[in-house]
Image (cartoon, rainbow, N blue to C red; front, side, top):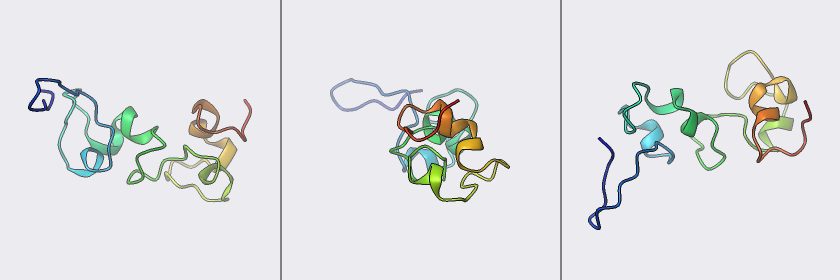
Amino acid sequence: NAPCLSDGICDDREDTDAECSDGVDNDGDTRQDCAVYSCNRNADVTVCNAEVTDALCSDGIDNDDNGYTDCEDFGCHDIISVTICCI
């Protein structure tokens, strides 16, 4: 179930550092934390070490340990927040 605020508004996405590192499937999609797209491809989430910013996509490090570095990483050319990599 989605966590709901006292005003009845529910947020069914995992998209904060707290939600992306709590070991809980907050959005009910059977994946948790950094396995969730809204965690691992979100420039505002820093706990997943995903390559989703210009700085992380140009540091020479495979930040998300997927075997690809910087612009070779699909995250660097598939994320709108990254402007330095072209497909």
